[in-house]
Length: 381
Figure 1 (tube, rainbow, N blue to C red):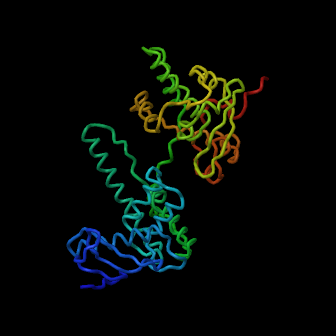
Figure 2: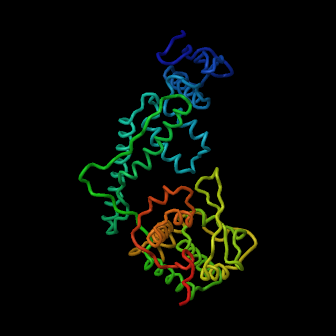
């Protein structure tokens, strides 16, 4: 007996009519007006209804709704946003959008306001703080130092508000909703400010280089020696030039000109807009690269991900000290701005495309490692 379900177009049928060894459970038209018939293996009406609803929702996600269409959910907007931006499961924004979809994916995008975005960000913050507290409690129980940092309101803005803002802006561009200014989450008045971002300390970097030098002197095999030589060159270049760790991991011998002490780097923050930056190599950097055995092509460094770098860096100087390549990036920006007051010069040195990005790097202290490259060698007399 055919019947209707409120909110779902078309006509449902109790599983009974067979077609191609399946049960016909729905006939109707899709959003484009095309006749459509759905069949399933489900024998019970509840399973048939669930199949139809899921299929129609997935079909709606594959086809962009028309401009001004009603009942466009945030899940549909997110699906088309990811397709438009070419995002996949390996991209950080995909992970961020997953939380938003799970919580608000069924909401109509027209009805989302700042109260909704604030609630989602606060829910993410509470969830992450609970997870961090549990993880740190386990470490303390094992008599280990708690190392998981408590997420801040800034983290909630980065992980939730920023991608939410992008989704709503995309929805407005497609005329699925009106424009909205999504407000960032703010810490309550009187709360303590977050810890400033860490920047690399020269003492820590020198300690790491000393540890690598010790391993180089005691290397038992040529293979082990080569690995430690690569670590030494990697640490020095990160702290000297300040490019992103992902860019150094893609650094290729084709981009190196050792006789001229020059190199070029592919700036890949925006993969749709690849930029090339030429840079100068210090004598120390040239020497460290030369002993690696320069080749015509191929990656300079062997590691496939940043976690590999973090692991050996922690093994060499942990647990009392810690070094991350991005901390050297902050240190270099702080150094240049402290010496010159020129944010544009600092941003250009580390490959920033936007001066606003450079403003976010706090000026804490001035590292002294390899200043001759950043400011030129000191003139005699």
